[in-house]
Length: 422
Ligand code: GTP
Image (cartoon, rainbow, N blue to C red; front, side, top):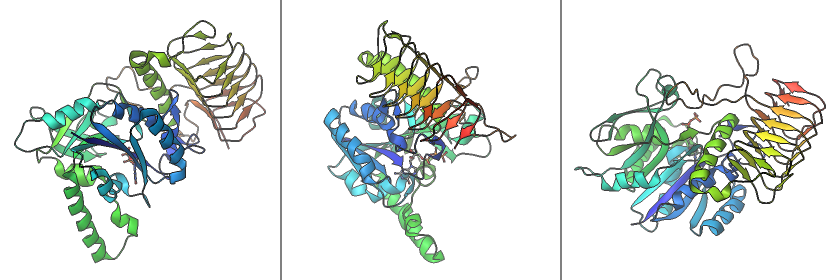
């Protein structure tokens, strides 16, 4: 058996809610729990025994991805390629455009993973379900689904399944009224037959565009997995639903990165404990990742749920909790970082406090997901959120920066609260 995987990463115009963190690094390469977001996808893929190739599909310039791809090949010793779409082709347009590359070597199945989700990916279980399903019709797709709250379900693709046969009965993308609390997680396994369906949707689109004589060339080639492939498959018995109870979340906003950081660190504790820091000097509380090249003073206290990037320096008496400190940053003596992201190459002076407000899913609501709250509330004021320092930001000693977003290359001179510093 031969299996491949495709990771959809979009391009520069996507991921805008992740700014300012995606201003200096493509969002899929932003570091969560010490590793680029899509490296977590790659790690899940390489666990699948028959998986022989990973294709990363997006419209970022190839030079933005080549270093990362080279490193991944060396690390995982598997074929990994980046294929660049000439324009945003939608969630299925790139799959169709590069169909010959995906079909090359005759894979039996291929996974498609949205690059902007994070999860304890149940890929082996999905593959088992897809290939062993006993029914007259062989499945074209098995999609991963999870339970959400009634209210939150409206911002996702909603699934109605036949509980007995586990088939997809009905699918609506971001419905305006309630359909179901079972949502699409953006992780699929396809049989290569799906390309026939894509071909007919594509051809119909060319005829439609030809008749109305409008649309740019890339609009004509764009295809959307959810609306144009999944929706027509609903009710045919050829789409299966794999419901997971494991952790899954979207990664749309910087606040979601803090939440994902915590969960990936937790997974490391179960499966890769050697990746987590231990010890009393510096004092480590709970799950903490410290890059081997980082320099943390023995009197610093870190954790729970902290990641410290390459070549970062954490000074004497510093205290960091529920935060991500990126590479080459310096947190000087006795400063405190709480619910914040410190961009790369930033410096925080001595006795300074950088603090944000967590935006975790509501713990009182079963199945609640991240809210991805808008930046501003109805009064035009900034909603409380984590504090984000872009890259190359300098914060002086003895100030407080609370619930604020600081754009890259800023040198602050005083304290700030609930502000965006442009
Ligand atoms: P939003 O709420 O608008 O963000 O929609 P969504 O959550 O349904 O996400 P969307 O469908 O836009 O994207 C799903 C995944 O596909 C993400 O990982 C995107 O980066 C990726 N994606 C979106 N558009 C494209 C595209 O044109 N090409 C490629 N290769 N990937 C894409």
